[in-house]
Image 1 (cartoon, chains in turn blue, orange):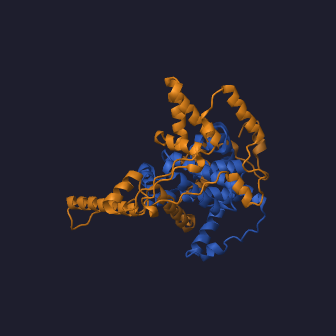
Image 2 (tube, chains in turn yellow, red; image 1 turned 45 degrees about the vertical axis):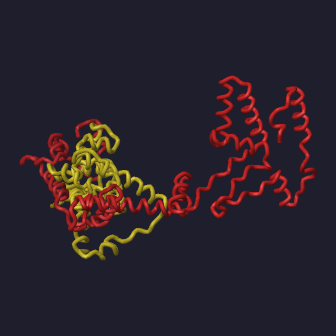
Image 3 (cartoon, chains in turn cyan, green; image 1 turned 180 degrees about the vertical axis):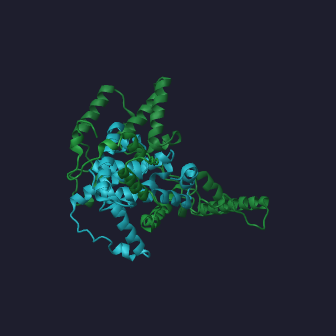
Amino acid sequence: VIGALFGARLAEAQSGDEAAFACLFRDVQPALLRYLQVIAPEAADDVAGETWLQVVAGLAGFRGGEEAFRAWLFTIARHRAIDAGRSRARRRTIPLPENGAEQLAAPDAADVALERITTHAVLAPISALPPDQAEIIMLRVVAGLAAHDVAQLVGKSPGAVRVAAHRGLRRLAAAVDRVGVTL
Amino acid sequence: MSGPGASSDVMPGFSLPSRELDEPLLDMLLNGRPLPADAPEQLHAVAGLFASLAGPAGPGKLTGEAAARSAYARAAAPVGVSPVARRPARRRLPWLPARVNARLAAGLAAAAVCLSSAAGAYAAVLPGPIQDFAHHVIGAPAARHAPPRVPSGRQAANRLCSTYEHAMTHGPARAKAVASQKLARAAGGAGEIDAYCAAAWRPSLAPAAPAAHPASHPKPRPKTGNAKAAKRKAHGKPKAHPSRVPTARRRAHGKAKSQSGSPVAHDRG
């Protein structure tokens, strides 16, 4: 979270400062990828890329603070993930093996692969939750969105979001307790 | 998890320690606040899980940065934030003062206007009066005066001209105004009315402009009495009676004459 400097960074990014845009990107991208790895694990990178394309296209017209910016961005990501899911359902594809060619071709391929494995292990208990609970927990905890923003994003009432989040947390606590996850 | 629906949430193989996980503690987890030390152990484990997700980004989490920055650079260009738009608004030659620079720019602009005008004059594409002026001053070709508009429908033109003449001779002021306005619109201007009506009444004798500068005037197009007949001829379909007026029209014409009792203007042709 950028905090007090967010307004200045946003204004700079809107006026064409690429370094300011990179600052926004680096702040949000990790949470975005983790969120997408839970709700669209097969296309997280692609959906993140499409999300940023749309953010770039609408950045000049965006008005609001950091919380609104993140809510806007995750709303876009959610819609793109839903589109990607529909698209995948329409055309059958053969998925590449995990840690595929693209990752190995990167200069820091070993670090990337290790990080993915770690992230996958950390996200696994959350991904095992019912989809709506997993998504709400990711939006609340990882994306850092407020309850009312999450409610608007997923199309539920704030009360329903809170109930779903509590249920998910209880399941998660039980799973962690049983499996004995140590972090 | 003490409500009536709690049992439906239980995952197979798990027993929920629900009584220890009260809602304020869960809200603290959701809001990212630190848990009290006496909170249940499993909640601390969940908090540790969340903390690892919120940790610093590794290289794998920023792999899309180059693509996003590239998209940003492309998108920023058309909305006025391209490197060109970021240039200083005014650039001047460093060895000239600003006033001289402004005069130089004005002089260059005037020279460009003069050159383009002269070129336009020699190409005979300037407006008529300006082209005439250039013709007298620098010997450019004279203006091409457009031939009067030839009426497209002769009957309609005859009617307009007749109405105009009648109104001018016998009509009230309002009729004069209306007739002259209609005719001027059809002729392409009040000054073209005489030529228009002359062409309408005597199409084969349309006034030809004197050829003072033959090279600069367009060749008058040969006028045929009946363009449709010429077209038919070209297509190999000769008209049976090219000069004959259709019977119905002749009848109507004669009827009109007999009804009005006085010859109308279009009889002149």
